[in-house]
Length: 478
Ligand code: BES
Ligand code: MN
Ligand code: ZN
Image (cartoon, rainbow, N blue to C red; front, side):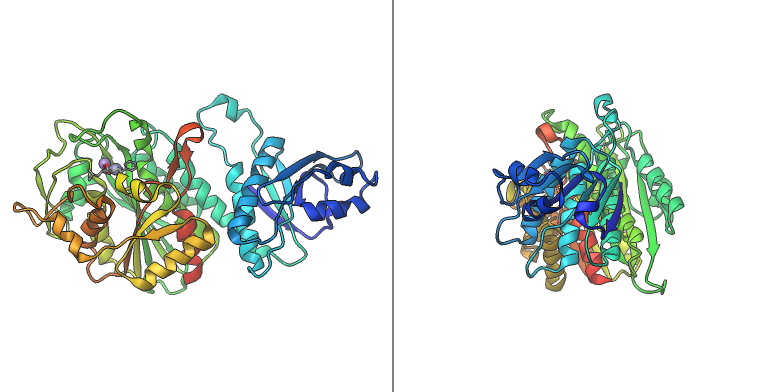
């Protein structure tokens, strides 16, 4: 999808579909023949956020269809997004390939931010996963969204496009099934990005990981016929290549069967989404490149498949992580933390300014927060505040839970330095507490996107969760 801006007056814009605030639509009546047509068509329109009225325009008008959207009284960023979602759905229903939209006025909030919230919400609704369904593939693909404004919004539009490209990339990866989106496929996609942009791709295969002592990661990947990959993308946008990078680490389990601690069959298909953390960090890096942010950013995707097999880990196995820590694997379904701990140790060697990992890590996080917010875990209050704010501004919200050292008690075992599960209580926190033991001395945060990364049911599909909050965080750091 392409994004543009225009300052052409609304009545003169030639477009298959024009979306404007209801009050603006009413005012257009004066300028569009026949007079009274719009006023009459809009007489029952509701001026509330989330309401839309669609009108076929009279012959001769520049726009073929008009979407008049309600705005309501107090317009917060949250409502702007709600309006954007409704407008996006309405545009989708029009089955057009391009549209022009005029953002609602937002008192108090800054215009660029509100415009971004509006346009990215619309673009996100227009996304469709087309790879595997003829019916969807045959629908016209939406091509171009133009934002009308009297001000110069070129930078804002560039940021909208950058984010949308990154989020769409993450959703595409997420939606691909486990037989297509394998660790090698993730690597090939990372390589493709590095060929198309000014970024470097490198990776470690299993023998290289073996040489680095990554016994925790390998204990997971070993069970699969598909080799695990530690994938790395470097974007050096800061001007000074020696300036410490922000490192984003993503859980990339391309399918999580649970391993020998096999999952029950209900909804196991959804464990193809267990690589959404990796998708989020690759997508965020792509967005950062597209936006030319003046930062050094590294994305690391820990890509492996968690399968039961003759080579798979058994409950009770003890493995040694890259850090030297021995881990008793009490449950092979707690595999995310095993691939992540070695990826975090690897990140640590790169002397980062900050490390943020993103993972569909625990069912317990879904119990705690549902699908409304991702779990945020960090001992660093300043980093927590920055991520909470980035979550609010982007609408990709996070909510903080504690990672007090007390929780490490639950990970104690007489047979190794640490166990990979912490018993029945506080499952999302003990997972974070496990990771925290590998991040000593670093500025680190963990995002558990288990509840937010995909939707189930009729709208089943990846959401791109993580890209919003991380891109907003990077913007604030730039
Ligand atoms: N990928 C899952 C977590 C998950 C489950 C995400 C359901 C979204 C929906 C993870 O690898 C896992 O299996 N975690 C276990 C941990 C447990 C064994 C301590 C879980 O949450 O049940
Ligand atoms: Mn698992
Ligand atoms: Zn998993």
